[in-house]
Length: 341
Image (cartoon, rainbow, N blue to C red):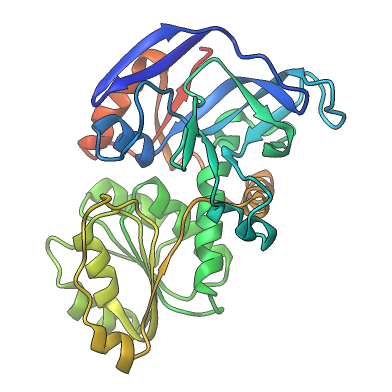
């Protein structure tokens, strides 16, 4: 089978590998669509520590083409989305239902303690507990279940109350998923900060109430005039300066959710007196759980998420490097790869 192999920083080789076989508790999935995530870009650029060579890709969906002898609930021909996070199910975090914090987490092509080859490949073998049926949903929509599940996990962390005011910093694919999810979860006015005009337009299309260009507007002065105190700021970029910016926008009792993947060794400056005196919170969120993944599939099945606005560029496996180049240049939004095209 063909795979997109990362052999080093900014080096991709399309190579032939042996098609994986399935363990007794696994299913073999023919990958029909796989989204390109910023985490994949970090792996490609070398800003995220991984062991090369490896096959990235963790936002995927496809058709079951073989099942292990212990698998009873799935058959060949089933259409599924893949949850790439494989927990140990034995540690304290797993037993508490926080499988994303598993001390021995394995990821299919994503970021975790253990990383195995991912879905920028024609086939992937997956534990049966890591797939969800998607019925007749198209595969490119189903491939968004993983990032949407991560966003759901983030919204769970902020304990959103209906009517609360939210600012989303960054209107890439993740930021736009957050806008839609926050709207569906009962948020009040949603403000989006984004320097790229096309992304600001997309944010309005998917439900933002206000969009601002942070390169032309003083957000700390403008946002309160628009919506008053901000209850929640979601950072969906992954840069120290945007994390600090998101924090600066929250009012007393506000929560800042750090979703974007920051560089591993960076630091941010946060006034500790604000944390004390105004009871502000900084909240992290990482990955997804089996529960948030299943909820994501349900939202997508019921048409709660506008996928067409998000997915702007589509490639076969040979186009992955071009997709990364577009992402580095902030061109377009979500990139989708079709390994078997």
